[in-house]
Amino acid sequence: MPKAIMLVQSNPSHPDREDEYNDWYANTHIPEVCAIDGITGATRYKLSDATPLGPDAHRYTAVYELDSDDLKGVLDELMARAMDGRMHTSDVLAMDPPPSMVIYELID
Image (cartoon, rainbow, N blue to C red; front, side, top):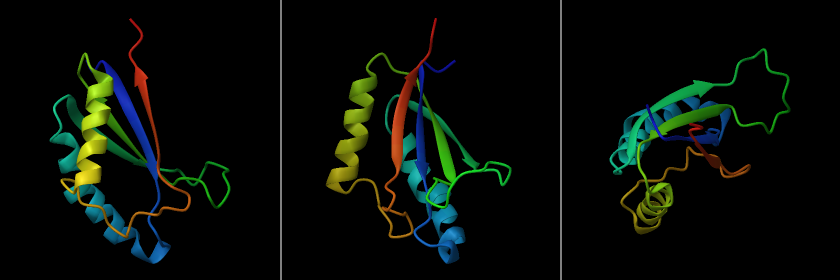
């Protein structure tokens, strides 16, 4: 069982680019994130049409499983890779609103 989960919410940069966004996320982004020690898996979800949210709501959520005693170290490595180019960004990822990220620790 993971020690924590990391939830990342995001959107495609434009509705016409949703297929591109999903391809980049599934085939580039998730493998790069899961290559970080301590991140053991990922599952993605799309917002249900049954959810009454506004037009700026994040439409996608990725749930990453973290199995590490050093969650801050995992996050630091993720940020380092994003900043130094080891993780590939794409203009298919919306930055307005920007993606959101939170980590939840398992309650024993």
